[in-house]
Amino acid sequence: MERFLGILIEHHAGAMPLWLAPSQVVVMNIAESSADYASTVAQTLRKQGLRAAADLRNEKISYKIREHALEKVPYLAVVGDRERDAQTVAVRARGGVDLGVMPVEAFLDRLHNERKRNIATDKSSHRINGEISAPEVRLAGVDGEPIGIVKLAEAFRLSEQHDVDLVEIAPHAQPPVCRLMDYGKFKYQEAKKQHEAKLKQKVIQVKEVKFRPGTDDGDYNVKLRNLTRFLEEGDKTKITLRFRGREMAHQEIGMRMLARLRQDLDECGQVEQMPKMEGRQMVMVLAPKKKK
Image (tube, rainbow, N blue to C red; front, side):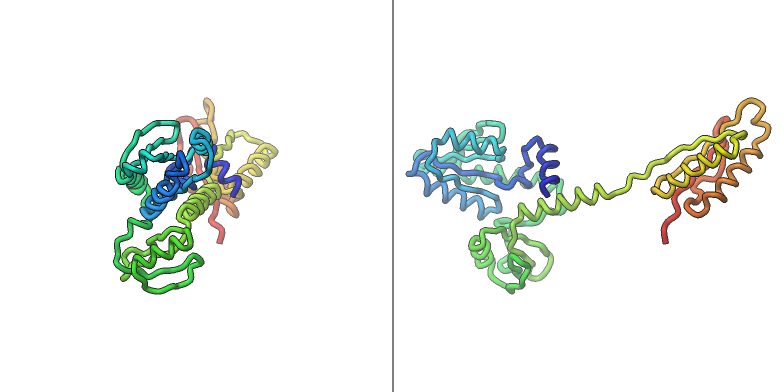
């Protein structure tokens, strides 16, 4: 897992995309008098399906901003007495971009629009938290245990109680099936599985081995061993036999040599392309035999 996380961090230069970031928004209070409002804003964001945290530490706001900026959190929301009274937030995007002061609803719209763009390119996305609209759902717990059919409000209450997300996993069921889970961790595990599956995929290469009509037995056996190894490793092989000058008048010699190769490689290879002339050379392609 550490290696995979390292690959992701390197690929994104430490700046995880919004859907993958462990914390999508950190809400910070400037003074103790705005701590309750910061906590309320973070809770509002979580109810709308966002992974939001509240940093209520008694530290200078510049220190908290710098700390979370180094962690490359996608969005930082700063609130003080002025923002509390106006029900707004001062928003900074990753990279220190100042987005200004905006109502909480406008900030939510911005985040939801960014999420929709992610969903448009991610067909496996699920509706979570505030995106779920069914009046009741069939609910499974954090460990997959069945809870039963409950009202949506009760499902939200349980998700807050366990500090996890409510995720719709079977939208077309009646009622829809939802599960309590850490959605960020779930998406991380999905991405990890896809990465590992990609690593396991065998990239089939075509290895070329060249012969001449006058190739002697010693050289023939060396090349035959190479062909056998390539086929056993799962690669295709391209056998080329080049004619020079008056050798073009004796193409039957080349046909006999390729027939001999087909016979000698019968246990590990099968003909994918029968011998044919390409300019002054005769070409045959063998593919690995499928294991039974």
